[in-house]
Image 1 (cartoon, rainbow, N blue to C red):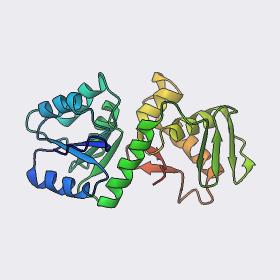
Image 2: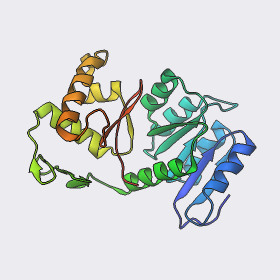
Image 3: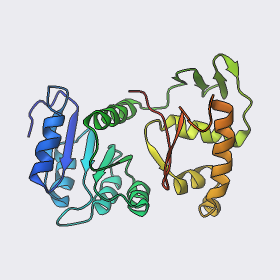
Length: 232
């Protein structure tokens, strides 16, 4: 375990020593303080004692399923959790994200992508409240004025399109499942109507994107949900 507690603290939860070594090496270099746990109970204890800034969690733990670990952490903490798992079924991703995970990477993954996802989570966790103005490339979302501009030109959005964009943008970098978005924007009665979301995402992309078939801002997590592009 690292003792450089002045650095952002990363808790790695995985029962395979080779994966632990790989991740510890990938995070080495003085940018992070790395802590490790080999099972779910050790992870829950470390979440209390270490107070990590980001948790990297494998789902296949020897003593409990990783989804249960997510749920138990979420009972008292909003620490960002990035799932790193060989499970690539959509159902597994949805279960983890609905339980409260912030992101999901399927093994094997690139170190550069992992570091970028960690940086996004660290920036989000430092924000006590959404920034009054969110800017990414040519897109600007003024939350106080409920005004969206693209390349300096106001966009005409419907109230639903605005709320959908606001939800995604204020959770930039975080994967939101179809059910999470539908419940938040339309209410619990719509969680089994994903076509409502698809239509509104399509309409929003045609207003935001130069090429709606190759979106820069609202990214699709196939079969799972959507993620607003995070910088870095």
